[in-house]
Length: 150
Image (cartoon, rainbow, N blue to C red; front, top):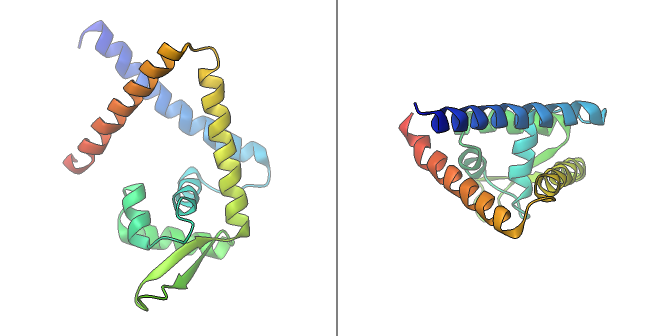
């Protein structure tokens, strides 16, 4: 690997680890949120669907198996962050919705991400912002395409 590739690999690995660590620490520091990062991301996924979403949509959105989504949703339902309701159009289907507490947690997480982006970009020029966004989109496309390969 050339020096650029090594530096980029190191930066990407450290960035991923740091994002996960910082999010975990932010949750711990809040003092009132006792959720894992994975649970927080499931709440975020459900929160993107105002009329609720199916377990399959959650599994697809988080790139996890449907049984794993079911277990996670049941756990969050017991904690009072989500609720499951029968779909009015298909009695076999279940919709997952955020409860009032779930919406509060989702709003907190959304605020955290807005703050992170604002701090990251506050000293960047418009050109630097465009380059950063383009690179992030390309990186995300690579990961999306790679998901099925492993």
